[in-house]
Length: 300
Image 1 (cartoon, rainbow, N blue to C red):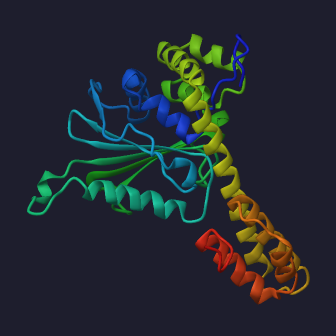
Image 2 (image 1 turned 90 degrees about the vertical axis):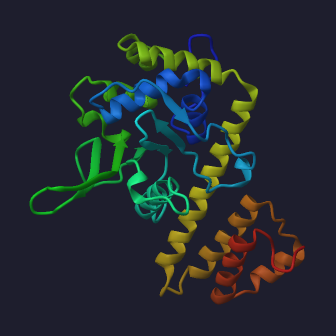
């Protein structure tokens, strides 16, 4: 996206940009506005305490890093906010695991369970995950027949950006979704003109986009996510090819070459000769070894 000054704006749907934008100490007001739009609390959210505002130093090397924003509200509730641009295998289980880990982290040895405060997960998804028409889905622990709520300590919100066209109401959450999805300056300006919080977020995004360090982090993170998608795609193709001998060896050989390129592993003449001589079982073992060790077998 390019703004009126010709400057390329960073994509707020990229998880590292999302975190740099909403977790920054100077942007607590837009974080409060976003949480208010999602949670629709009875009482206003006056203050938020971001417990993990920093971005991991080893982010470029960790393709699987989760850049969530852990927030504690004044009423004691813990909120975990995450921007997710892809749908890797096991995603639903991971969301539940992260909720459980965050909820359990409130207690130390000897604490009573009554000390626990509700933990809420807010997951913003670029792609559709759920077979539902709603763009905003909320899950709690309910009795299946009567709808009786067992506890308010578990709550999970899924915001699926790809379903924005199904949201007819011009509410605060729909405007935030349009802010994240804006493809050009015109679309960004249109939503910013309708909401003072979006205008503030747009200004903050422009300022962030001028930061060379943020630009480099975004570039590295985007490349890492693209590479991870490629590896996942080859893994799926490998699974689909099981039981079919024809073409399977060639598919695996291409997967090995791609994995080596992504991992920075050189395939010299000797390795090429070894690679060409491997059968399906050998290629499969080599591919798994590369993914596990991130280097050629025997390389130090």
